[in-house]
Length: 78
Length: 78
Image (tube, rainbow over all chains, first blue to last red; front, side, top):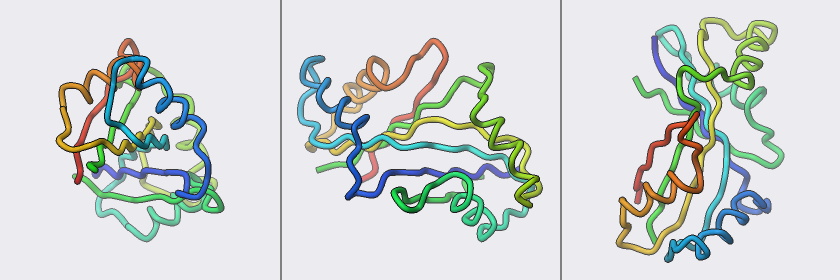
C-alpha cells in the first residue's frame, strides 16, 4: 500500500474568499506577521503498489481539481 | 517571507462522506487499485521570517482545525 497526496489550490489569479476571511480574523486573534492565506483541498489516497504516477495525475485532473480555476500537485509519499 | 503549510484532516475514526463519494466514483471512471480516499483542507500561509512554529500550531489549533474531529500538521517549507 502506497500513500498518494494530492493538493488542490485555487490558481493565484483567482480570488480566495475563505483564505481572505481567515487572514482578516488573524489580527483580532493576536496573530501578527502573516500576509497571505490561501485555502485549498488535501486528498490522501491509499493505492496498490506500484503507483502509476501518470494515472494519479489523470485522476487528479479529471476528478479532484477543476483545472479552469485550480492547479494540483501529486506526491507519492510512502 | 516564509511559506507555512497546514494540512487538516478528519480523524481516522470520523466518517468522511466526501472521500467515500470520490472512492465510489473511481471504478466508474476506470481507476483501479485505490482502497481509501480521505479529503481534508490545505492552507498555505506566507509569514514574516523567522517563523514561530509554536504560534503557527496555536493558529492551526484555534482557527483552522476543529480538534474534536480533526487533526492537523504544520510544515515550514521555505
